[in-house]
Length: 77
Image (cartoon, rainbow, N blue to C red; front, side, top):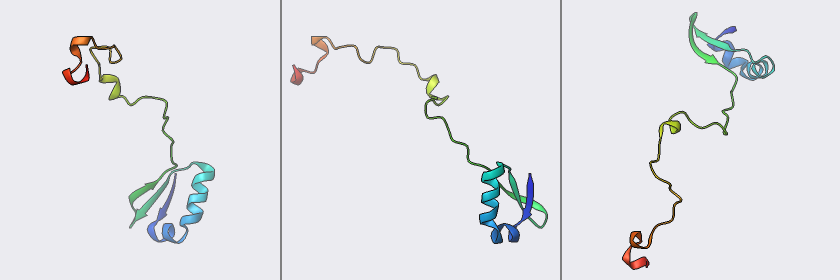
C-alpha cells in the first residue's frame, strides 16, 4: 500500500492510475499526514450471480400457470 499526499496525488494522478492498473495496489491519499481517501482497483461484479436480497423473495404460486375461464375478466372472455 502506497501513501501519497494530496498535492502529489493531484500532480501525478495519471501515473498513480497507471501504477494502480499495473500492480493492483491500493494507494492512500493523505492530507497533513491523515488518510482521507483510498484509490483502489475496480472490481467487476458478476452479472450471473443473483443479488442476495432477491434470494429471500418467494412466490407462493406458479406465475406461468394458465388461468381458468372464470379467472379471466369479463371483458377479456
